[in-house]
Image (cartoon, rainbow, N blue to C red; front, side, top):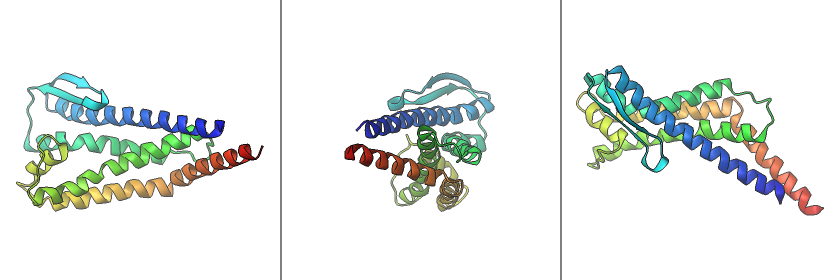
Length: 189
């Protein structure tokens, strides 16, 4: 029983840490663009249920105006790519393997919103409080929104490819098998 409890606690800790890192990177991505535009950051809140940043002023070109919406998703995604490239599969620590899977896979899958949103937008649904809809609303003036779906699908696919190719998924499965084996052995004794 103690192996199962330990595994569940590690999963919870890794998920909490991943969520905190994701939120900081997401809001940090928005903040970075606002600073590039010369804005003054007035608020940076990473409380998960109300994470946001606010700014005043700034000289936002049409490009920066779109970029501020997209950068919240791109920064965590790019960090997960870098993490995956630096991943060391020879490290056998269960927490490291669980956390590595979560930070790479969850960040890649979070970009799935950007794959689906253009289809909703084209069919008349729009939520202007959401970064992806705000971006598409601006992008739509210049290009077909389905380009966003295509690019986002490639980014998600790249993330999944890295998770598989770098052995992160396999290492995560090995952790599950190790825990299952330990639990079965413990139940026999």
